[in-house]
Image (cartoon, rainbow, N blue to C red; front, top):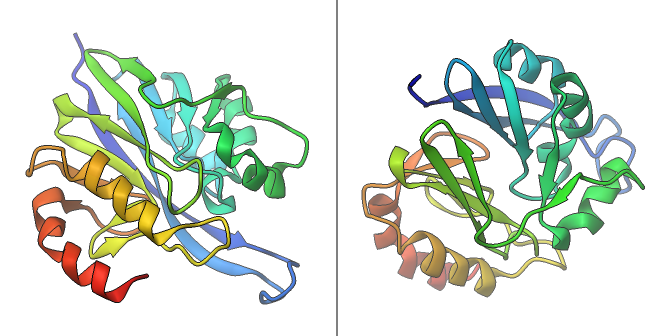
Amino acid sequence: MPQVHIERIITSGSIGVGRPGLPVDGIQLENNVWLIGDSERVLVIDAAHDAQAIAQAVGERETLGILLTHGHEDHVNAALEAAQLLDTHVYLHPEDLFIWSETHGDALPDFELTHGATFQVGEIELSTRHTPGHTPGSVCFVAPALNTVFSGDTLFQGGPGATRWDYSSFPQIITSIQESLFTLPAATVVQPGHGDHTVIEREQPALESWLARGQ
């Protein structure tokens, strides 16, 4: 059986173009798009900025789904186009539909993500963990056989994701990290939505400093 591996695509683009309070040309961001698959099939985690680049990275492989860690524009803005190019379905937690709609209007994802939902590619299983805080519908995807968690914007190298919006919650993101991520094996690799990876055991000692900072 072909071996499953992880691929990272770094895409970039502008978000918030034309929105009040933001620069006219929006804000430029780089995002990680993750492919988990083998030579035949692949799952995509997040669809940021550049559907053509995602489709090119997938190549001729069958795409089993586009799994979204949350509804923010920079994680979903290429989702519908990528799904069309790859002939696949888009999955999003329903509590983030109100954020998704800021980018895609009345168009909807194909399926709702729920806590505990699993996805299979080759011999690898990904399980969904609902980790609210950054957004109400934020999720992470755990792949125990790969010793990896795909954390979206819930956990980064150096701390939790931002909670500056009125629908976000710093106490909630801390609880999500403690209960859903810090309970993973210490050597679990954390692959976030932006920037470089980290490891659970590297982040755990910083918890008290995060709490003291309170944001």
